[in-house]
Amino acid sequence: MNYKTFDPNTSVPDAIVVKLYTSGDKIRGYVRKIADPAENDTIFPGEEMEPAKAFQLAASHSEGEAPIYVELVEGVKWNPSWGEILR
Image 1 (cartoon, helix red, strand yellow):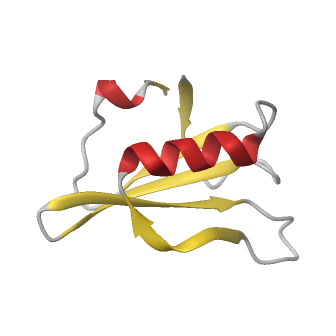
Image 2: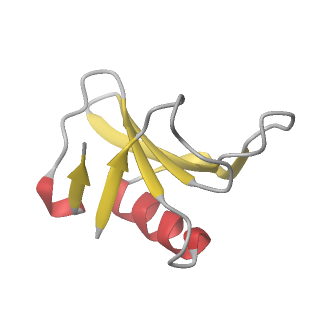
Image 3: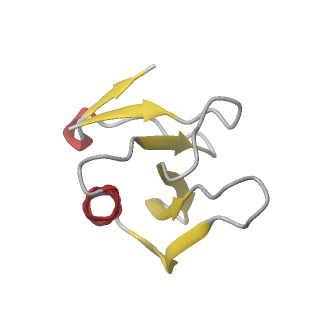
């Protein structure tokens, strides 16, 4: 699957964001749906999960239509086994 690099200045409402970060010595993630600027983003679910599960959840919430963005923080490097990330 192809993903886009998250940029808060170009991301659109209803898009899905997978945020990947480190927790201890593991990479974890959570998924959120970008809301209209007047509202708060929706987080699905609130707990951290493995990257593969986060991407599965993102795909189910995008329903194949909403773009999926990836936000890498805390020195997380992209793993090609997750898919292709477009810059």
